[in-house]
Amino acid sequence: MIGLAAMTFVSGQWLWAFMNDSTTTVQIFTAGFKPPYSINLQMGMEEAVFTFMINLAGLLGGLYLYDILNKKGSNAMLVFLVFIMSMNVTVMTRDMFNLFVFMEVGSIALAGLILLVSKKEAFQAGIKYLIASGIISGMLLLGIIFSYHFSGSLNINDMAAAHLGLSKVSAIAAFLVLTAFVLEMKPFPSNGWGIDVYTAAHPGIGAMVS
Image (cartoon, rainbow, N blue to C red):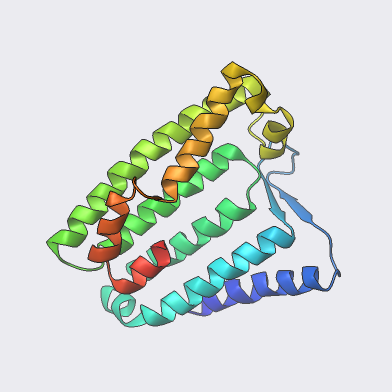
């Protein structure tokens, strides 16, 4: 809970600073290199808004789920922290493959959280979620491969500058990536596996999925 509160406080500080125009967008590079040789994270106004919303939801969800997480032990708490962390990185990363990796991390953590409820329906929902996420991830990975081929970079800014949708061939890459993101949001009518998660998982986990 201290970790969740600290994450909320940090993202809240960033949001407050941007709202008061006291800071500019910050880029954080890994391994001392610049893209495309490193992964860069970005913290701007949009990132501050969404990470604060994610961490606040995580803090409130942690409070609601505290009893069951405490009963299941420290491993369950760790999985919950990994789930919130993965959503933070998906917002801040500017590297498409890093986005894919942490979407996978979040999916695996979420599948574990679904199984906090020890009943057959939750197990079935968790398996369906993993299968659906695997198919979506395969589509996304294929789109990333094509996007890298046409743009020459995994950096999201570089891919945007390449205008992948302008030619018929490169539009396939953009189509695969966008379709994967849309399916990940579980809209009707492709949300049957999502409904199972909402109904079978613990209500607090269902809320975090939403």
